[in-house]
Length: 118
Image 1: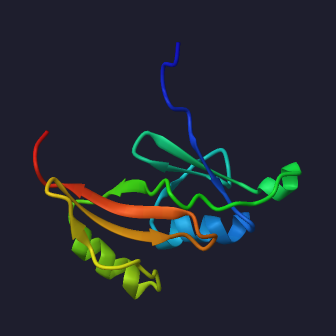
Image 2 (image 1 turned 90 degrees about the horizontal axis):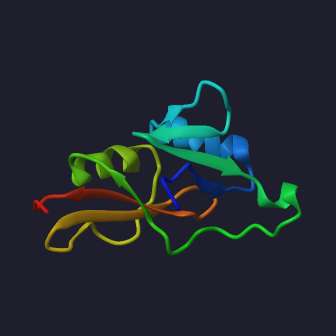
C-alpha cells in the first residue's frame, strides 16, 4: 500500500528564517519550484507554518531527523562556527556517531554517521 516517503514536514513560526537556516547554514539544496522545500539526497524537507493553517505550532522535539555526514566531528565544528548550538557531546552508539542540535524553531535534528557496516 505505501510505496515511499514523499516529504518530511518541518513546522516553523517563520518560514523565511527556516529557509535561511536550512539553505545557508546547513547547505541543503533548495527545490527549483518552491521557496520552502529543500532536498537531502532524495528526501524533500517541506517547511510549513501550522499557525497559518489554523493549527498550534509545536516543534518536533523527539524525532531527531538524522542528517548523514561523512565526519560528524568536522561537520559539527563547521556548524558551531556558524552559531549552531549542540546538546551535549557527540556520542558513539557502537555502530554510529551522533551529534544532536535543533533548528531555530526547536525542531530536533542530528548529524549522523554509521561507522560499522550493517
